[in-house]
Length: 361
Ligand SMILES: *Cc1c(COP(=O)(O)O)cnc(C)c1O
Image (tube, rainbow, N blue to C red; front, side, top):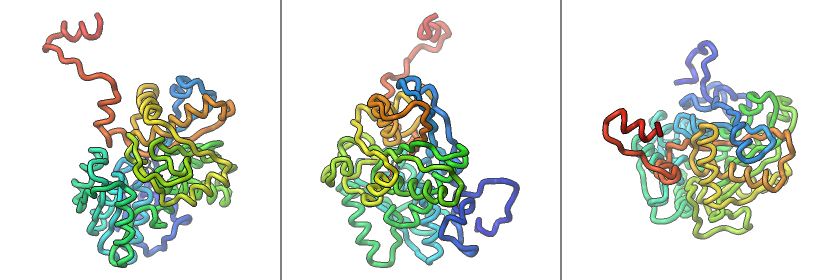
């Protein structure tokens, strides 16, 4: 087990090891880790310039986690606790990234994993992950909220560990992203931007920022700015959405499980929640790839679309330090990437001249 490996040099050992004093583990907890976390914080000056902003923007690039989304931070914690309690089976409903992560960590822990996905509504890369890690993969003829209802009922049987973000250990693990941001910046940001789906992550980040501040590891608390997709914006609109729609499938959620906590985070931090259209999401998605070489999935770009909106509305004072969570890797969703890029490969005959002609020489 990782937990009894000797410490070797300064090798990063995953978020549970690294932040154990802030997490519900003991020395005998059998930690299941893929060395998640320690993701880079990348400054995106070109993007800021392109949108006419005057802030400092840092992107927490969670797409470089082991299964290519932030979900790994929560999953190492949830699966660790499942093993500690002697669970045999883990289950989740997912728009794709939770299932990919659950499947990987369950494989490593030798647990059976069952995932419920909205049929036909998850990105191709995420489906490939669940299948490759060997999870029992069930496509439910319904949306995420319906799949989560079934999962809650399965959990009530007491035989199965639910690893959705209604599992409190998921939120605990995910809060470590805030710790890393403060460590990497040497301070807390003025604003933190992120996309909101089931609202677990906004809950986790706010908890993380508060705990680090209370531990005197950071000097301030950021304002939390969350963004939903216009076709699935229950928190913004103030009512559950029965049939949510958006190109950003990771946030296609009509009745967020952590709604109350998200509302509290927004209120306590003097934050802001708004919605952005699919058009705005896809424009930001393409822009961040082209200006700064950062390829994220559409849901991640929702908060960049939100930043564009805030800059235009004059909500961001000049010189503000902003961090934003890039929740998942762009390669998760190749279909949307190829559609959004706006052009196809140019086919030429196999000669230098043909290539020169395309280049314009
Ligand atoms: C899960 C997920 C979200 C939404 O996070 P919540 O905690 O459900 O609000 C956003 N983007 C990506 C890529 C995700 O996988």
